[in-house]
Length: 322
Image (cartoon, rainbow, N blue to C red; front, side, top):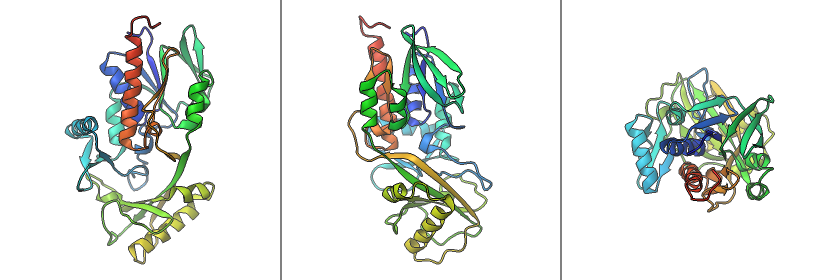
């Protein structure tokens, strides 16, 4: 179909979903990721006490297509059911959350630690320029699978798409991992309600196949509080969330033996959308992400798949320029 490959910027679930769908259709794909690893909010942090899921602790599957995908990932050993729940199935990556994204990457060409700063037209195709000035391409089409503010900055050649992305408000979330040498007497699953500003606490060590050297808990703050404390030092964030955790448990916590604070600047959209994915198909530009829907992991997967569908549909339509 394409003489040149498709570039996908971002290796969160949206980008990986798009890449998978395109590979299934026979398209060559090249992925670009500014971080050192894949997964976006499904990433796991490597620490001195083992991997810690500092982002989304688990996810649910409500739609039949995503449930089918999750079952396949389960069969492939990438995810396990967790926590036990009534209703929508809950899942987590094994032996860490990032295992899912690593499995979905398969043998796709990916450039890690490569921040794309510009997308430039090049003889009816596209060329990407990274932060080091290196040029990549040509590419037949480009899919942006990044947070809305980052997508807007890269879409100078497509003002309509840039405006839509710029209209999306993204909320930050502070996450803190705490490690204790001795297990805490507390519930194992994602806990709620919680004492403000704590929004959720998760027993990371209780997940399937975890092998942390300590009893690890991950605390996630309220998004409004996170926004108000965006530039607060991580050590102070950790102290305040640990105090809220103690109030939630009504238990005098011992001092943590391990602490890690991480700020997710673009954690979730403030308002849900019904876009699925955005496209300027005649230009070969597509945009996807959980923020195109309601911010869930399932939404990211659906959005990436929709971006791939739109690209494939346009390029198999009689009269298209590709």
